[in-house]
Image (tube, rainbow, N blue to C red; front, side, top):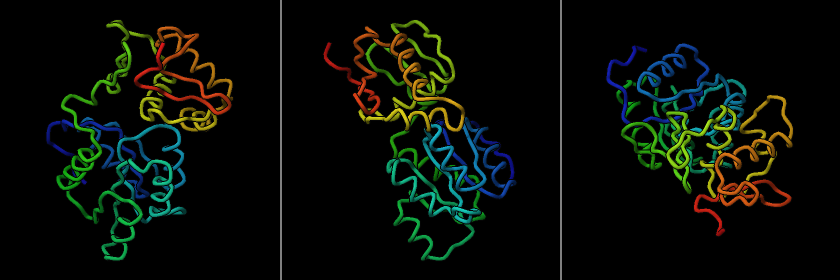
Length: 242
């Protein structure tokens, strides 16, 4: 696979590349990173599921012929929890039955190897457009209340002033923003933001409290990061009535 010589793409996204062939995986990561995308990789289905549990992605490039859990199984798992996440299947198999199965399981597109970089870029752009991720200078700044969050710039501002934010706090905040109005259990937050690292449910509570202190008008009466008693937390982008 050659290195892309085109200028960076206008649409940037967080892309998970799931491919067991190291040369293809590394080539895709290099080319898409040069276009401005943030890429993570996984060499098999199990690692892909762990990556998806650990952090949010905007799109998944998913090889079908994976060791262990194949791409169709991974796709089923993705669709069970993230029906809106764009998934492009990559495979050397061109049989019509495989294409039909992938599309019926919820794949957004199906790309047969070998493929050109131009074709892949076009299909990624189309999938991101369908998902509503159209940008011209990175991801749009997300806002709630008097807070602005710049995913690409790893920057948070409140009332025009920068808010100091650790990497873990920022990851937790992004997970809330990517799941508006969804009730997220503390266990789910622990899996998705902390992954396999040693942490406890109390850790989640402490980090939510720190986000509230930095971003809420009143940390003791939160309007945006709301406690759902006995379950976990919910991000209310429009805020609760004071």
